Length: 258
Image (cartoon, rainbow, N blue to C red; front, side, top):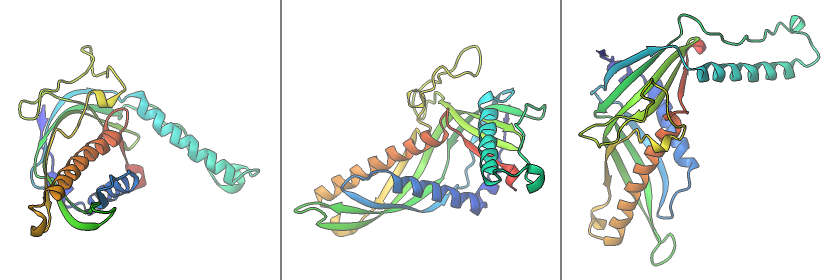
């Protein structure tokens, strides 16, 4: 079963755009940069106008992992509450402990095939550091545009206690992107391994364009550094999504906070 996504709602959601920018910028600040680059920053992000193709493959009950994650968070909140009101009963303080989440009939899980070859774009700025003839001899401002992102993966979406969990399971074979096959148990949507890097890239293709001053376009060492930077960013973008989205990791949207 296939269906359409109201992509315009994503493109107009400024809060979601800001969260993506903040998450990527935190990531770039946390990683160790090579000596030839400094100050990578995402300054613009756009979902574009082309939405992904989504096919529903299976409907089932949510995995126990999601209930465990919610209940672990509840235990932490209750523990903090107990510390704050140490020696005082809950009746006296008015504080109530949250109860563990149990399975409900309204809980549901979807296994979906997600294919995207659209026009999402990212714009980054950075400084190219020239370390010859001496260290940090010169820095050149760069503008880097990432576009033509392609992915084709199985995606798990679970709805539990007004919380939405999204996790990418594996890449799907795609003649346009590559020939990576999905790694799933043939008896059902159960992963064969918990090591995500062995089964998924998420981003299978992307285009990177770098703007640099005209006076440096013919300089061999500068161009080599630019090529290295583009490969570095490409790999780190893939690593970021695998770390945040590839099973056993997931993104959690809590609608109880609205």
